[in-house]
Length: 146
Image (cartoon, rainbow, N blue to C red; front, side):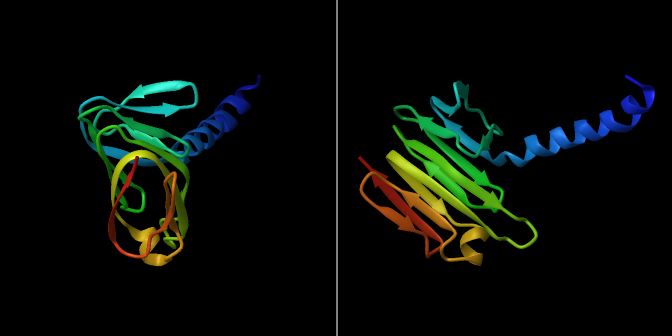
């Protein structure tokens, strides 16, 4: 490998890899109480304050546990005890505020305060449960799935 490659292309490849990794981060845990974990592929990640949430993550709270997540568009989500929340899809453009948030609450309780996605487009945020699909039209809501 030539020195020119190492000095010119290696930093570029590193920057592209870092950008791709950061693009997968859609939110951060802001508060956690009790046992909470994220299922990411085959991994099971214990949740602490500032844990990164990525698209396709499943957030699982234990008995007497809760978690609060703030997403890139400032949407805030709080899951209560014995909840399972799947982040099916999330995309957000910080310049135009365009994007989509599609989540499934398999069980438990969920409180949502919508951010810039819902403010820009009434159809941008969807929360599914085993029995219904919510299209977010307001700024705050609660939902429970048994």
